[in-house]
Structures are given as C-alpha cells and as structure tokens.
Length: 533
Ligand SMILES: Cc1ncc(C[n+]2csc(CCOP(=O)(O)OP(=O)(O)O)c2C)c(N)n1
Image (cartoon, rainbow, N blue to C red; front, side):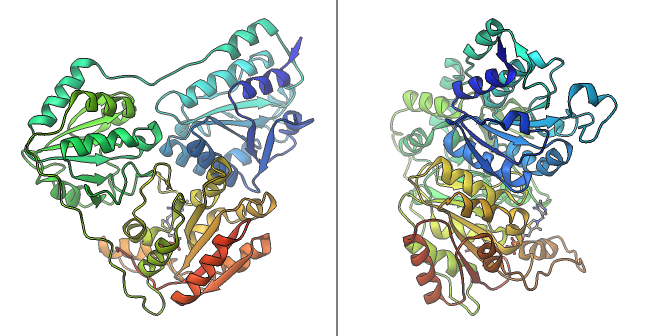
C-alpha cells in the first residue's frame, strides 16, 4: 500500500512541482515532516507573502506551483493574494491543513470551519475530500483546474490525519498518469473571417494584452503587426499584469488609459480594434463616456470564456492567444498599401527636481537596466512613468498585480527571481506598497534571492490623492505616510540597504546594488504626486 503522503509527493514530482511555498503550522506538519530531498521549501513569514511568491514563480516558470497555508487564519491571510493570483491567471495549487477528521465535527481548536467556503469566490475549484483516500485524486484534480485555461488558483483543504492514511496504488497510478491540455485553436472559418476583416479595415489598431506573453505569442504578435502595419497600444495598466508587445517597437504607441470615456475616445479614430489577450477592458476609475465610438468595431481574442462573455461590446474568439495569432500570420501576407506607423518620440528625460521626480528616477534606472532584466512593479503613482522610461521589450520582462491588490510586488519578485535565476529581477516599489508584504525581505535575505529593490519614498499615498482630485472628493483622512523607512526595515531583515536623494547618489547606489550578489535595496526620496512621464 501507498500512503496519501507518498502518493501526493509523487504527484507533485510528476508535475514538476518540487518547489513549495508556504507558512507552516501544526496542521501542516504531517505533510512537511521528513521532507523529501528533491523538494525545496520556501518559507514566507506571512501567508500573503507565500501566495505572492508562488504567484510570481508560477507566472515566470509557466508551471503550476504549490503553496501550502495554515488552516483558517492562514487561508484568511492569504485570500487577498489569492484574489490577485486569480486576476493574474497564475496556476496555483493552494493547499491548507485542517484539523484531524475525528475532531472537525466538535470544532476542536484549529478546525477550519466550512473550509471550502472562504477562498471559493477567488479560486477555480475549492474542495475538501470526503475520505482520506481521495486526497491524491483531489490534488490531481486541483492541478488540472489550475492549469486549464484560464489558469488560476485551485484550493484543497486536507485534514492533518489524512497524510498517513493508505490509498489504492492502482487508482493512484491512473490518476497521476493523466495529463490535460487546453491550448485550443480557433476554427478555420473564424480565422478566415477575422483575417478578412483585418485586411479590409481602413484604420485598424492592435491592442496587446498580458495573455500574449503568458501564451508565448510574443513573436507572432510582432509578425502580425509588422505584416499588417498596425499601430499598437498596450491594454490598460490596471489589468496589464504582463507586457504583450515590445514597447520600443516603432509600431508601439503607448499604454491605453483605463477609464471608459478616455479609452473610447482614444480608439475612436480606428474602424477596427483587435484586442489580443486582454479583457475588454480592465476599466478604472468611473469616467463615463462612449465605450466605443460609432463606426468602430472590436474583436477580442482570449482563452477565457468569462472575459469573452462579459465584454460590454465587440465580438470575441475564445482560443489560445498565441495559436490564434500564429494562425492569423499564416493567413495574412504583407498588407499591400497601408503605411507603417511612424515611431513615437523617444522618452524625454524629466527634470530631476528636488526632491527627484519619479520620472527622473526611472530614467536613471532605464540607463543602467540590464538588457535581460525583469521588472516587478508596485509603485502606483509612478507606473506610467516607468512604462514610458523603460520601454521594456523582451518577453517575460514585466509583472504587475492585475487585481490592483497591493503586496504582490515585493513577494512576487522573489518567486520570479527563483523561477528565472539567470535574469536580474528589479522590484520597484512605493514605500506604502512595500508594507503589505514587508516580511518578504526576510525570505530574500534568508534564501539569498538576488532581487534588487528600488523603493520610491514620497511620504504619502500619492495615487489616492490623485484619484481624490480626479473624482472631486476632498477631506479623506489616512493619505499621509510620514516617517516610513523601508531601507532600515529591510536592513533589519538582512537585506543591505541604502537611502539616496540626488541623481548622482541614485546612480551610484543602483550601480553598486546591481554589481553585487544577493538582495540589495535602494530607497530614493521622490517628489509626491502622480508621475505620468
Ligand atoms: C491590499 C490593498 N489595500 C489597499 C489598497 C489601496 N491603495 C491603492 S494604491 C495605494 C497607495 C500605495 O502607496 P505607495 O506604494 O506609497 O504608492 P504611491 O501612491 O505613493 O505611489 C493604496 C493604499 C490596495 N490597492 N490594495
């Protein structure tokens, strides 16, 4: 006979899930005891950090990733990060310990009451197996749910006495031998029709969404855009958790505004909008206007049926984004007469200012950014400035929280770096955002994860002040953040840190951080306010 524990670890092995993120409690010890040597456990000191690290690892490795949480309070701590992982379409197996079966009904201490209900709105599947012997099968199902499109988290609650129970080896072998694939091609007729609409459009435009990168459609998107001479916009930054098109390409125009009115107006000059790999659209905030101008048509390509169904306008093709773009490329040759778009201006270097402007900080970073570097970004009021100054242009170079939930950036950066050890991860944070996952600095130091952190300190929640003005709201408390020192905090967790205020100091500190091994942090004092360039 095989134990649940042996069966589960064999299942994890078969799926390449040998890195487990987590925060343990007594309900998880039976799973973790005698931890196999071919597995690696990455400890987060709070569950939101463990989930965020797993999210970054899953996205940057393209593999389903296991995060193990402590019973009810641990799952509760992790829920905000699970919500973000769902928005990011990160394939996660989320497991949590549960009280021993015979003690659940009497609600002994640590019982996770109605365990499957808590994460339910934010996971694709939530389950507590009815029998110990079902645990490996439930884990297998969760892995398939997590990876099939749209990818996302799936949850299994596991009573702590199940691990030692026995399973039928035959059933188990059948279950772990299964593989599932969801890279669906669009129908030939759909492709022919879309190609014809694209060919005959007068002023078409391409909107590049995060799923281009996640599906491996980067080269096909470039080929299609070049052949058809399309101008390109990135989908709004609000839901754009990855970059879908090289931002230094001559066809690239910029990042779409996220609110209904301005977005509709910007697209009004086009008769056909082809959206690839984005919802239509991750709107925010509520600035009313026309969703789309009279005379503008829209077609979206997405692997997510929910995105296709909930779009307020336009047609949709539900299929793998990369395969659909490749099929379009095969169908379409060079457009015979359309003019290629004129390249936009290079980014202007904003005035340094005193304190430094966020744009000047990002221009400084851009000048020394490693060619194959990766940015993990959570610096809300400087997001547009970073996108404009860095103009990232390689696949897998950018990760951002699609849900808007903070705490993703700092933790995900560690997961991304673990998944991509040969590329330098630079994590750009606001000092307010850093607080939501502050204990991740300990993991960075303890596991020598060589992320370089750049923290912009403006002593306030700048973006919330900007939103207040935009929405004509005044008098809100709680928008000032005096006296935070992320450098001192990170240093106390073991990450060598520096604080700078001038451009020369910033240049020196960044160069030093990039040249050294291990994690390093540079905190820079910046002027408050929204930075658009
Ligand atoms: C979990 C979570 N709590 C609260 C918010 C609301 N929120 C959005 S941006 C922001 C300010 C972040 O501050 P900081 O990182 O200093 O960035 P700045 O706005 O100053 O650029 C807050 C609190 C959120 N998005 N997520």
